[in-house]
Image 1: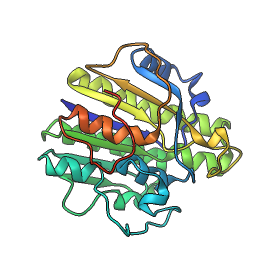
Image 2: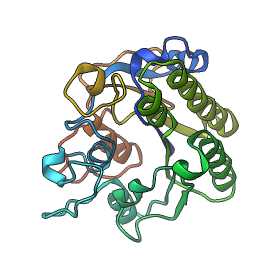
Image 3: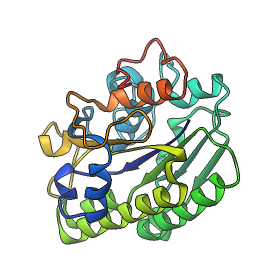
Image 4: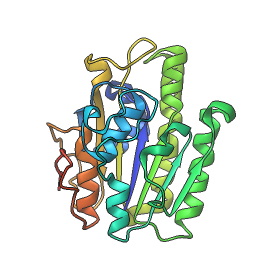
Length: 254
C-alpha cells in the first residue's frame, strides 16, 4: 500500500459546500465533517500533534516557533523509517521543516509560498510530487498546501478570496488523485479552521476540521464520528503495516 496525506491549511468543513470536486471526492470516501484538532489551533502545534499523535502540551510546541521536545517521542516519519518505509514531503511553509527528524525522509521539496506565492507554489509542488512519485517508489507522501490559510489571514475566512484559494487547493488534490489513480490510498484533512482573519482559539470554527479517507478498506459515502487529528498518524502507521508508537494518544481508524 502507498499513502498520500493532503493537508489544506485552515480548511473549514463548511467551506467545501460549493467546491464541486471536493464534493465528488467526499462522496467516494469514508469521511467526517466534524473532526477535532488540538488547542492551541495554530499551524505548527497542530502539525506536530498530527504527526506525533499527542497534545501540544506533550510535544512542547505551542506556537509557530518550534521547541525541541524535552522528553522526545518518535513521530510518524521516524516510526516509518524504522520500519524501512520511504517517506517524502512537499510543502510551501518553511516552518514545517521540523516535523520530521533528520534522516527520516527519503525526499523533501520546499517552495517558499511567502516569496513565490502560495497559489503558484501549490501548483509547482503538485508538479514535483507527480514527477517524483512516478519515478521513485514511496510508501508515504505528505503534501501540504498553505494557500487557504494565507488567504484567510489576509482577506478573512469564508471570503471570496479564501474560497478561491480553497478551490485552487482542491484542483491540486484532484489532479494528483486523477493522475496517480487507485494505486494509492488518500487522506485529506486540515490542521485547523479559522474565523474572521485569525484562528488559534477553542471556537468551533477554529477547532473543527474535515477528514476524508479514500482507498482500499474505506467505504464510499460512510460517515464516521469522534475523530481527532491525533488519529491520523496511528491510522497511517497501521495501514502501512507498522505498529503505532506506544506513546501516541490517538487511535487507528482501521
